[in-house]
Length: 123
Image (cartoon, rainbow, N blue to C red; front, side):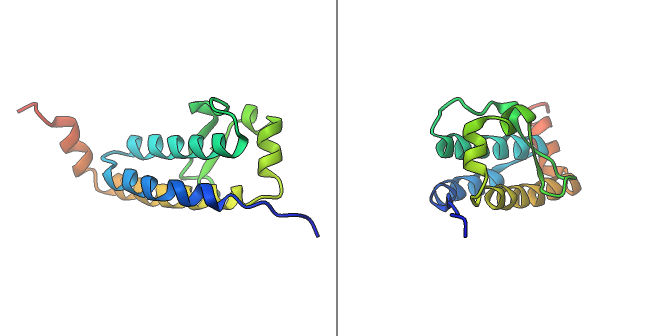
C-alpha cells in the first residue's frame, strides 16, 4: 500500500479567506483572480518555495471537468510532481474550483452586481 500525503492543514488555513473572497467577488474576473491567488498560496506552501507558482500557472476553467487548469510548465516542475502524486492536492483543487465555479456561474447569470461595480461613480 502506498503512502498518501495529506495537505488538509493548508486547505483548512486557506478555506475561510477563500470563502470570504468569493462572497465579496463582484465579477467573474474577481472569482478567477481569487481562485488563482488561493491556489498559488496553497501550492507554494506545499512546495516550500515562495514564487514557485506564477499567476499564469493556474487558472479557473469552468468548462473543464476538474474546474481548473494547470500549465505544463508547472505540471512538469519536480517539486510540484512530488507534492501532487500520492496526495490529496487534486481533491483540494477540485473542491476550491467547485466553489469558485458556482460563484462564477452565479455572477454570469446575475450580472447586476458586476454592472453596478462598473458604472459606480459615473452618474
